Image 1 (cartoon, rainbow, N blue to C red):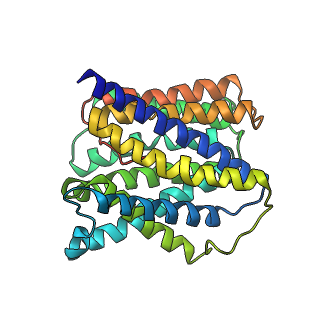
Image 2 (tube, rainbow, N blue to C red; image 1 turned 120 degrees about the vertical axis):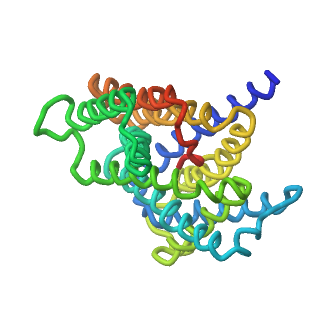
Length: 304
């Protein structure tokens, strides 16, 4: 039993770390190699979506095609692929392009606060004291991260802040939206189809065979990493880890994602991270632990 739990923890930590590294590599591709967000999204989502759907089909008692046999579930799956998966991927990558991977990932971590507020409104329940503390901590952390403690001055562009907040809101939607589907079908099936649907959708904007930007050995290597080690492998590793330790523990361990993104952004790309940035990041990440203490945290699907 302990071996299974240890395996689950290791798998989730690997997945979260790879997502963080992938975000930093994506920043390099966007800002230095001038690869478009839409092109990288289409390749990333199509390849990973096809692979996960294929993996789903190879499972014993596979339910790969089952969602399409129910009209309501088919519509839910289409909605998740476009409004959930595609939207959260695009807003996150756009936030990276206009700021950096560390800032974009940390801002996205304010999504649990949005989920807590949404659930309170939906079920007409007042926010608990711990929820209110978490909201205050998140707001203070965000304030320090985007202003460095100086009211009226933004440390990042208004565009980057807008995409970061949009990314958090999209992640909240992405977390809540497929809840009914995940209760009825295997996670690999839903996530695989969601990626594939989103990939097809963004391909209408930028087809994967219409490349752009500067192509050299670094571009090929980092693109391959984002597709394989930043999408396919961590998604599968995360799903495997959740089976062993559960969604609540897994959601806490995903805090390794902004940490790995911050370390690599600062050490490799030379992104300036000041004391206020670290304090703000720490406060935002801590809200995940505060909300987990309520024991009513929504177990979110794999990260981006």
